[in-house]
Image (tube, rainbow, N blue to C red):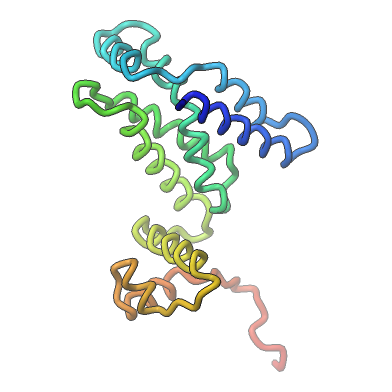
Amino acid sequence: MPEKGMAEEQEDLEGKAERESAGPSMLTIYFRDIARFPVLSREEEQKTARDMAAGVEGARDRLIVSNLRLVAKIAQEYADTGMPLIDLIQEGNIGLIEAVDRFDPERGYRLSTYAAWWIRRAMLAAIGEYTRMIRIPDYLFRAVRRMAQIRSMAEQDVIGEAEVGEVLGLSVDRLRQVEAQVGEIVSLDRIVASGD
């Protein structure tokens, strides 16, 4: 069943990439390339990870390429952050490589479970670094992103600052302070008043 789900996700990703452009885009080509690599079973994954630890050539690469679809799937979650999807995937691949290098199969977890944190971490660091003119700390970026998600979920209903602060674990004063700190950037060249 997981392979069928991954195949359907791959078709969705390819379809989205083709809809965004007239012909086969870089993303479409990339998605077709990564679809060629099968997802490893738990046993294959553990054996390959042990082989990597023993220095078997190609084991590390096999772990990486068999999890590239995971990176593409996670990148879709951050597609609305203002960073191009291909750049998110690239940063996520860096996180995947870090996860593969640190992976310990003896702990009993799947690589995908372990790698998801590293992939998200790399993507969020890139988003925080490259999508804003003025860089803000990661904890503020995460708080603002969570605020936006909560408010978008509650668009139909009126949700007050107290409820948003409660969900985020922030006081109303701290919530206002965070919003003020990361407000929209104002150009110094912008005309402030037309009467002067």
